[in-house]
Image 1 (cartoon, helix red, strand yellow):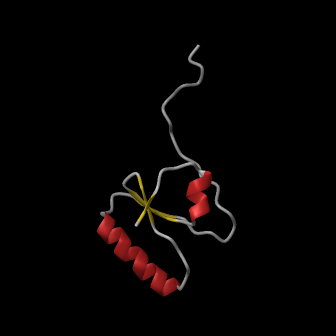
Image 2 (cartoon, rainbow, N blue to C red):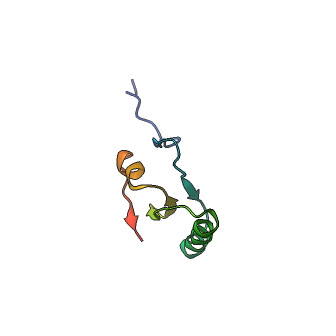
Length: 74
């Protein structure tokens, strides 16, 4: 029996109500950062910016922590 060890097809993360999570794929870090800064200015929301395994993620600290993901502060 294979014991359920297979390739990971997708990831899940628990997000509380009222929280926004943005993920940018195939976008350079500089452009993603610029885009998020513009979005923060337009929406006037408090946010944090993280880089996660070369993917750009903007989410509160607890979202990344509960998912037990490695993240880097920018």
